[in-house]
Length: 547
Figure 1 (cartoon, rainbow, N blue to C red):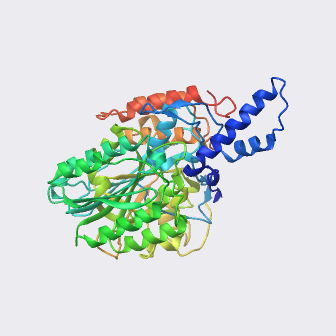
Figure 2 (figure 1 turned 180 degrees about the vertical axis):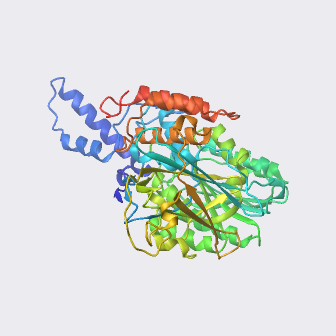
Figure 3 (figure 1 turned 120 degrees about the vertical axis):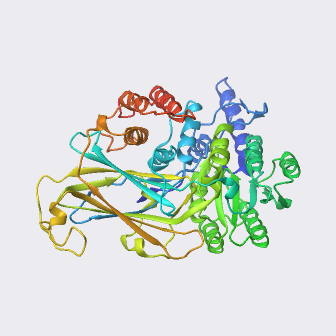
């Protein structure tokens, strides 16, 4: 249930920041003069109104990364606040159905906040994206299937009376030299608010350009007060021309995002490659405030183009006015993934190291449905995925959109389970529901997992399934996959001040993650430990979790 949609945003657009700053300055001067014995008729309601409409206090002058003195910061970052999944009775609600999610934006955005010495707001923390930021040691697909599965059941570390079920999907890896020919359109926000981050955008897209095959084509469209094509379709063999076009980009103006998206899709359609990778790479802070900016209208446009085989990947940049809500919605409906780029190393991870996962779809509309055995499971809770839940009937409906998996992607889902201490009877048409004293229900089966996916060019899904046995491993004897994923989930719950965080504290997370780092070739798990320690130091004193 979405109970708070957007943080204040409408009055703090780019084209009104200067007026807000001017008004703030006048009122501040008036206030100071009044304290020196001067009598000025200052209406303090105006100042209150500004502080109310702006989502964070106004700070004083600051130096930007580029060395330019900036006006006071007006924090209008926008996030959705979703009620957490609660425990479901397996007798009355035996099915749990959700879409796969390969987005990772939440983790890198939270990292950016912590690096800026700010404790993350709860809406910025999406547990599944925190978990899925990391790769896990899952088996590779066999027999020509694009997706392999992984399962593990252990004790739950934050509640000793519960269990933790780990379900993983692993998409097949590909050699990028064998990837389909790409028709990419770089759609770049060059509005005034992107001034401080445009250099990072350019460097990020240069990294991607360098790894593209000579047969691929790249176009560049920009948008601000007006939209335009900066670079017509150019083969990646002519890298110098593409890099030079990126170098020339400058920021300025308000954000006519919808116009830019329409132009980018027009260009992608005109140069469409049958059987190829036709994709728009949108680099933006997500703040569309000029023209047709309704999120619903943009989603309809992107969904329509998705059906024509043109996908959308969103790369988020920036701070203070960053619109996480719109960025995520656009990527979700564009059959693409959503990543937040907070530094050049993250750009390398997303666009170079994981280029196949970001750019090449190997399985689309991936859905999972778990049926819990009420003879073994009293109740269950899906950890995260609140905005990926599907109706049970949507699982077999191939017209319903779901998440896509790129080459090498992993998807991880955790369930907290309350085991059944007694037996019960029920009659239904499901696997375990006909009679709980049947051999299936009374046996060792804890759950029955089904998953569907479509080949990239197919409209018909394939159905696969597997059984989860009730063999429970002590948590400290479980795999590194299980222990590290649990540590990430526990950290996300602490950051959100979750009602389900149980007995976990920061020190337990740090120790568990440190002991489950594995080889950690890229140092990502070691960095996670550092972020946990930093969040412990930054946690506001009024938060209920112990420091």
